[in-house]
Amino acid sequence: MDKAKQQYLIWKNNANWLPMFDWNVKFFGAHLQQVENNWEMPIESHIGFEVNLILKGCQETVMEKNRYLLQAGDIILIPPGFKHANRCISREGMTYFTAHFNVDDPLFRQEMIKNSKILFPSETEENGKLRKVLDDWVEMARQPRAYTTTDRFRLQATLFELFGILSQFVCPAKDQNQDQNESIPPTSVQYAKAIAEAIKASFNPYSPMDEETLENKFRIEDIISSLGISSGYGLEVFRKVFGMSPRQYLSDLKLHEAKVLIAQPDLPLKKIASLLGYSHLSHFSRQFKRWTGMSPLQYRQSKKAALY
Image (cartoon, rainbow, N blue to C red; front, side, top):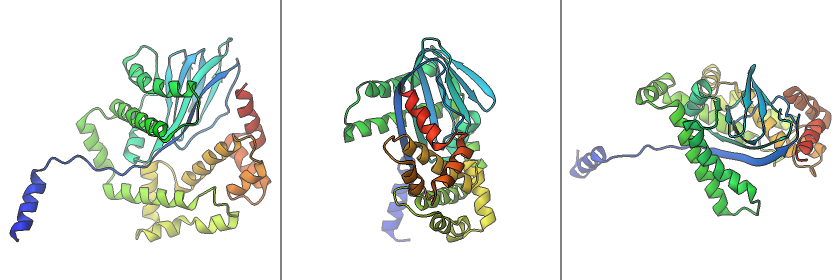
């Protein structure tokens, strides 16, 4: 070994390195809302996390056959994939703040789904930590404006702070992190993330294509094969890391995007169907009703009613 290489290895081994990470973080949006008594949202689930903060009044949340009653100041965290429904149960109506976000770190998502607390009652220490973050978003929502790049960086910085707080709730001990890393080999995690990225790349609603083209473009077997692994192994590691099949992952992506597009009142439903790869509005309507129990028009009307 030459002297230069030997010196480099000595330097590398003696340095204190911070961990490297490569995460995709997404903030789907948030809003502050005032609703009347008996307002409700149908049963739904999301590809990312949802957090609700009740500012005034009371909310009932039914999730995975469990019922939660939230008073003013309470916070509820809904993990990815959990079916839930929210309803205002206070006679005077309710004011709430909700945000949707996600991070593609599979280990963090798994621990959140498996171990995370759901309800954070007002006046508890954990609630206080979360309120410091959420109140920053609430203040921004109270002052609507044309948001700048600086505002978006502020939103992202607050989101990372929120992830840091949540990770403390589910991963407080070093030994737990070690067990977590041992449960899923790093190579499996990388393969699962590569499959997920390929799925997201194949689905772009702003580059419309018909159903046949989308079906031909999205062949999970081809995606897995391109990584040099067998189809069975690829499906196994994806399910282990993300807790769902690749098809379900794509379905959740489409459902989330459908809800975002339907919430835009001036965008025709036929156009939305086309953007999502459906050649006929009737095909899209049937699929959306299977997802949510409501037609796209009913869902749009329910969103519109919630604004008044």
